[in-house]
Structures are given as C-alpha cells and as structure tokens.
Length: 456
Image (cartoon, rainbow, N blue to C red; front, side):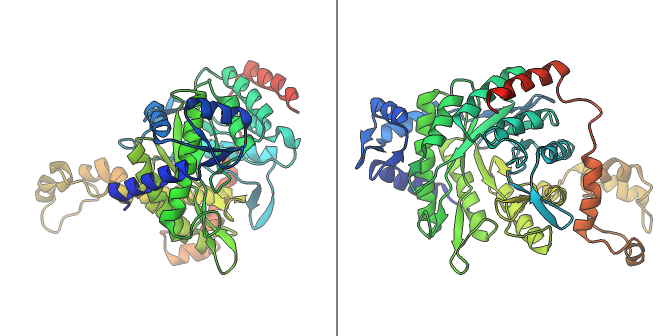
C-alpha cells in the first residue's frame, strides 16, 4: 500500500511542478481569475504558476464529504474514509451484445439504464456517447434518457458549454438536489483545455459535484515510473481543484487519479486493465486520504468480449480497487478499454462484486457465530441443515451467485453446456424490461422535452 510518507512525497513533488513549470490553462477568464487569486504568470501567455498557499486554500475549502443524491432513497455520501466504497457504471461509445459490436443508441441507453437500476451493487449510472442523435445534443439527450429510466445518481457526459447550461436547468426540473454530477479530465501533461475549464465554469454555483480527473499515461504523457506519473497527474488534479474552488468556494469535488494509464511499449496502446492501473488506484485512494477528499478510480480491461481475460483483469481490479480504500469505483460493464460496454459484462461484474464483497466482510467471530450451544444441541453425528441457526444465518454467511455454475456436470450438459457469458446474456433481456413505475412524472418529462430543442 502507498504509505502516508509516500503520499507526502508525491504531494511535495506536485507542488514543485505547480510552481515550476506550472500548468497551462487554455481559458483567458480562468487565467485572470487565477492571477487575481495569487497565481503567477508562467513561461507563456496561458501558463500559470501555483503558489503553495493557493493550493492549500483550495484544499481547505473543498468538503471532505460529498453527497451524491439519487431520486430513490436520498443518495449516498462518499468520503476519504469511513464510508463504504460506491460503484458506478462506465462511459463508452460501443455496445457489445451476443458477440456483435455496434454504436450505442438512445434506445440502448434507456435499456441499459433500466438494467443498472435493478442491480443492487450499482450506485450510479454513467452517460454514453449516442450515435443516433444530433452530435451537439447527445449529452443532453442522454441525460434526459437516463433520468427517465433510472432513479439512481447520474454521472453525465458533458461535451459543450451550451450543454452544461441546459443540464443546469434540467437539474431543477427533477429536484433541487445534486442528482447528477459532472467531471472532466486534464489533457496533459500539465494542461487543462478550454472546454474542460468552461464546463467547470458553466456548472459552478449550483452545488453540482464534480470529479477532477488526472489521466497521465505512464511512458507517454507522464514519466514511465508510476510515482512520476502520479506526481504529474496529482499536479493536474490540484490545479483543477484550485480552479473549481475559486469558481465556487466549497464546491463538492472528487479526487480522481484512478484513471491513470500506462503505455504498452510492445504494441503502442494504452493499458487500462494491467497491474499498474490497480497500483495507480491505490495511489488515488492514498492521495484522497492525504488531502481529506473522496477519491475515485476505474476498473477496466482490454478484453474485446466477456471472456476469461475480462474476468481475470476485472476480478483483480475490483478486489484491489476496493481494498485500496477508494471512495468511488467506476467500470461496471467496461470492455475494450474505454470504448465498449457490455450489459452481460455488467452482470458478470456485479457477480464479481458480490464475491469480492463476501471476501471483504471476512469471518465474524461472536458468541452467536461460534454457535457453541448449537454444537452441543446437535451433538455427535448430528446434522445442522434443519436447525434454526442455519436458517437464521445462511443468507448472510454464504455467497449465493446468480450466474456462476454450481450444479452437477450432467445438468450442465443437459442445459446446453452454457458458459458464464451466455448465462449473463440470457439474464440481460429480463433486466431491461420496462419499469412498472415511471422514473419521471408526465409533467417532468414534458419539461425536459421543452429544454431539448434549445440545444438540438
């Protein structure tokens, strides 16, 4: 695990990088805001140097607890420590179903949101890139589609300042609470684009939580050493935090170094499901605790389909990310790095989460679980299956999978010799069925529809 001393060294290195060479901010208004707050001009017109005091002020303003509302039972709070880790789905642009891959559509978004809404371990639903709607409105249409099909927290994909404005208006239609959140990634090294900064600016002032993502690729947009890549990504996140706290003092911000990649030097591709990614998730959790901010990471795989590689990479990913103390973990359903989402993989991920959750609960040792009196009552050569103690405890003690095969071979052969992915696909259609109760009222649906022409 990354120690507090390691975290402090990463922090100190990032502070030195923020002071020299600084960070490029491709937004004149944000640059002016930073300079007025104490930032110093850098080597070119768009670079600003961040004094340590400016960073410290931002860290002092940012809340340690971030509430992510839903429209079901209130929502949940993420914090650097003391709260259970939360799980979200993942963005993407392609859909994998039964061995075929195609672009994601609005109808697919509705179906997938309903499936995720029915998975107990999923706390939030991510937006997708939609291929069958006007490109400039895909993010807003996606938000309206998700809101109509899930009451869980929504993490939007916001692609333009105009969309950000419409989304802020959509927020009030369904309730004056943070039922959706935003976020953006630094396009480094040590650089924030105008689009990212403008979206931070347009969504500020509404209490909308934001995820600030540092996404260095070790060996490409960051040093190949993981500590060096972490220092660069951390500097980018701290710069984004300063910007957000100047725009909206006290804005809820989630620290995310867990998107960091590495470059596979053999094939020249970004790696998202390797051991290094899981180590960088540990860094994200450690730095979140160091700064007293909730942290985030992302479990992914390079696998093209829900196969053995996907199961290997994602099982290790879920276990290590959750054990690392990360507050919020994305990745349910992810395939092909960032590109593809599979509903069947989402169900397999959900099964993995149940398995890992049981491992993490461990063995509870109490008078009740030791069951000394029960052992005496059953006696020598007795049986426990019919005892009330078994009935009282088996559901909480024993992990009961929905997809993993535990029957006899002859039954498996008689049933068609199905593999895990096939069983998951069979369950997908059932979980995508329309809800019996609508997620929005007719009035809310009409109001959301009235907002869409303003962007399309």
